[in-house]
View 1: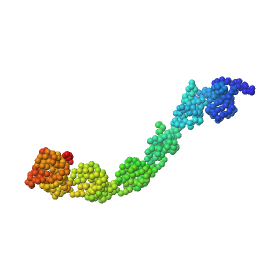
View 2: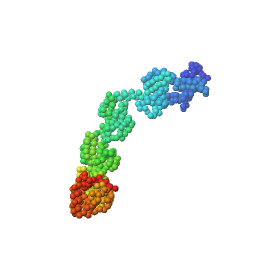
View 3: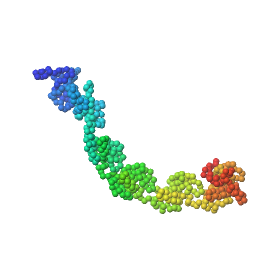
View 4: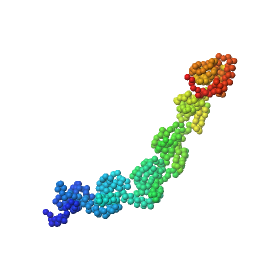
Length: 555
């Protein structure tokens, strides 16, 4: 039975839908609260309607809004959250004018952002949560922050908040103070905010500074990630401050002494040094001599004799290496190193080892259009020019006499130490037959040979001593010969008379029809041959020989 005080108190309450009344907490359950408002039945309020659910105790008085006096179960439906919203809306409008500040607790994640309880529910877009939109919104739920009211819609009774604007304003204030206080030479603490190919952006507690890759280390870096990572805390040196553009240039290597200051004393030219291969490029290898100091071994300085196409063919990353200091450019921070200088240059002794006139042996390593390269020892080649392959034959390409892998002998003709070249000759192994041609052949001699080539103007006959003679078409038969191939074949054995010898031009004229001539007949034939001139019906022997290079075999 109600007491008089309770009856009087109940009498003042208006139990109507939408009314706000006071209630007493009868029971606090895991996910709800049972509340008595003095009506014929109690109401249940979900726990998520309370900002501080843990603070709700049995016996506590709370304001609730009556949503329904009776649901299908005969229970009154209450809302503490809506009661607070209705009570607080006018107060919120006064406090939270657009641009005003308010504290609130993040309640839940919704599409596009968060719901924040500031006395009423407000919306915080995820883009307005921080300077950089966070990926994990869940970490903000349950936390209380200060927000700026950026928009109020009274008709829809909603509020839009921003935390980012407050952070940016705070950072701007800090930035202005930092710029005013900061001078070159200061050492400041910062956090690596972002990495790019050209450097790193460092957060100096409200002001971003650029740490360029060239100011990270006295040594060579290909990317900032080699020594830095996002979120890393470090001390940096202020190199330059541009207050108008709010730009700060930072340095990391400047905290240490420049190892290049006394580089000439530490690594004198000509001294042997040790280091580690830190980078392999197509043109050379970078070797770290000490932290911040690297030297370059150019690919041409790896070996005196080996043909190194690229450094990775003979070196490995992180390999320990010895080298000789060849040159230093302190201004450009460059050191030239050489590996081959650790050993003697075989070309220094080439002139004595391969004396002119000496007979040498070697293997044909390569053929070109103008000659053959012969390997005399590893890394030292000699070259036999096509003109030095035969005294008598016209060699158009070395493949006519040689092939790769052939073992050959040759004479040393010249040694060019400066250009590292050795000229060889194969024909010089034998005496030039034309130097003693008078002993080998005389006009009138009867000779035997094989037809080696047919041309429209005559036939070439191979004689002894690798000498070719030319039988002009007029010298084949007493009868007129229309086509060479009708009377001679390649490989055919023939007898002929020597009718002309020109030592200067290195040519021999032959006559098959004169093989049976008497001395008188030979003299007459010789006069006729000597009188031949270009343009006449009979082609002169000289021009016939000249055409030998371009002759086409007659089928």
